[in-house]
Length: 252
Image (cartoon, rainbow, N blue to C red; front, top):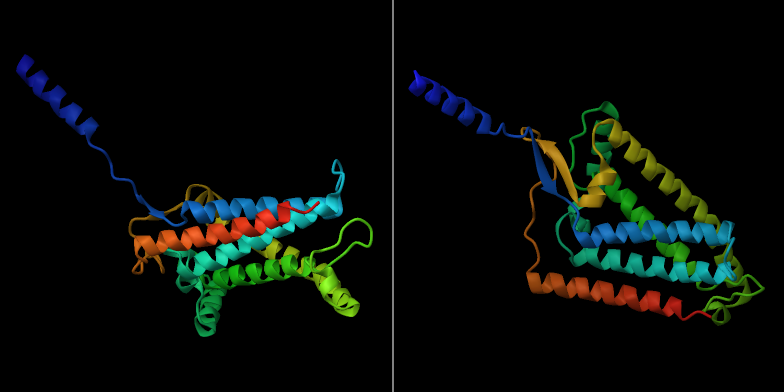
């Protein structure tokens, strides 16, 4: 009798200890470098908006605005270098699709049959390039500007007055395009969230979760660069970015 109870208890324990496999699988998407880049860029853009539109609590808001502009330039330089020689889903070759592929994906997207992507889908890839281009234009045009009061960009005196006026127009017009791209980016985040894809959390911890039987369009990992090359590229990207940001920190 006790033997039967013992066998029954042992059987129940073994059944309890058996783990039910998770229906989801975790895929590493974004490395630490890209996650830090994303966070610092968000903070820099918010700071630039605050110094340009509010400025409360700051003695010389436009000087801080210029310093943050240098930060944006440095971050864009880092992202471009890492996009060319980095690894994983951060590389441009991984997510910048041809116009034909992007057009076909857009049609599938509107029809509700677009495949899921681990990294950027074709539309998101071109959005990323557009964002980097607009940020580069915004930051570089600011180097030539002056507020005619307390601040003058480091390159303002090196160009004719009419060119400076044109760049000022570009700087103040381009910001509208930047806000538009940011709005589209936020709308895409909400749309993916409604589908159960939490892009914000993926950028925080670097992972996405997919069903085990789910097909992901870009999950296959290309041949990564060698480790020395990857570290050299990362060091170069960080070095140039820090140099640009340090230059901005020297502003009076």
